[in-house]
Amino acid sequence: MITSDASERLIESTRELLWERGYVGTSPKAIQQRAGAGQGSMYHHFSGKPDLALAAIRRTAEEMRGKAEEQFGGPGTAVERITAYLRRERDVLKGCPVGRLTQDPDVMADPALRAPVDETFVWLRGRLGEVLAEGVARGELSAALDPAATAATVVAVLQGGYVLARAADSTAPFEQAVDGVLGLLAAHAQSTAS
Image (cartoon, rainbow, N blue to C red):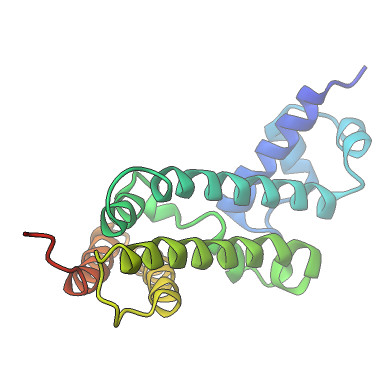
């Protein structure tokens, strides 16, 4: 009997291959080989490559949201929580596993595959906006700061930082981009000294 273990291995293998090779470069055969699963197992659990890719993309998006929420929901000021999010450990030179999917024309052309990617970035901008709005409400950040626009800027800088780092084959441009956006946020921080 085919177990859910095979399904799990297929999803995890597809996640890895999508990040490494993209959708077109992720063949059913490569998925099966990496997962140590046969063709019958794959088609028992999934109707085909698009169905398996959707499960993998959803899993990656859920994981990204979970990791981000660890920082956003943690202790500290709004800037401290955003700093923790931006400076957390990442595999910068591989790029963002969700962001890289936006550069994959086959994923973007398929509304079902594109949806969890879009939903993740909508969530990320919204959640960052909430953290920034909390900072404004608590007097940590200037009332002149637009939380929604600033959240979009933070996400754009983060994703752009990945692109610059991959192009340079160095994490330095990513780190510089993070330093830059944190400097801009710090300029909006209110003094809490009494």
